[in-house]
Length: 184
Image (cartoon, rainbow, N blue to C red; front, top):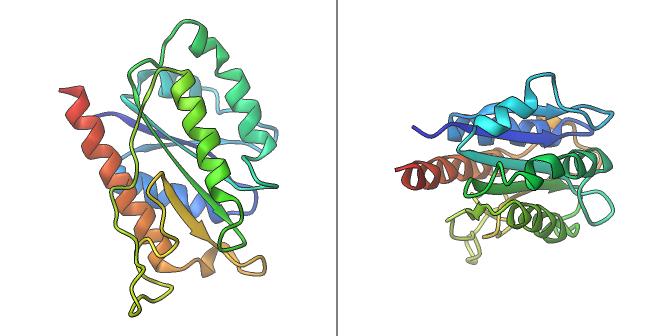
């Protein structure tokens, strides 16, 4: 089995719920970025030892949160030594609107992974886009690049739709499968 870490920031708890679902699917360890943009004491060691890094951030103003950006900037130490080269990377995000510029956030995460010399894994999930599709279906938001969820601005984390959380779990499983294949 590949060793997988989920590094994420969550401002209101919705992205935390996604991270938990992704980690459940991937059999991964959670590494939370705190409100000041810092990792826990052993966070860098966990990421360095991982075969795959799944990154998550809410979409704020069309991109990652400033706390995630602080982490990304601090990862330049790993970049300089190419410590994360050839790791599998993936990403996920949540926002209040159905679109909410989530793809911009995933592009940011993808670019960060490519700067580190990583190998990107998408969802591998077909979208739920038929006439019979329901909002609670898996991959209803329809993302191939990474997992996306939508949580209304007045919804608590407990009110997140099971379909979005199942999408996150299946995405985690996909990343684990890809990481295991690359690990050899």
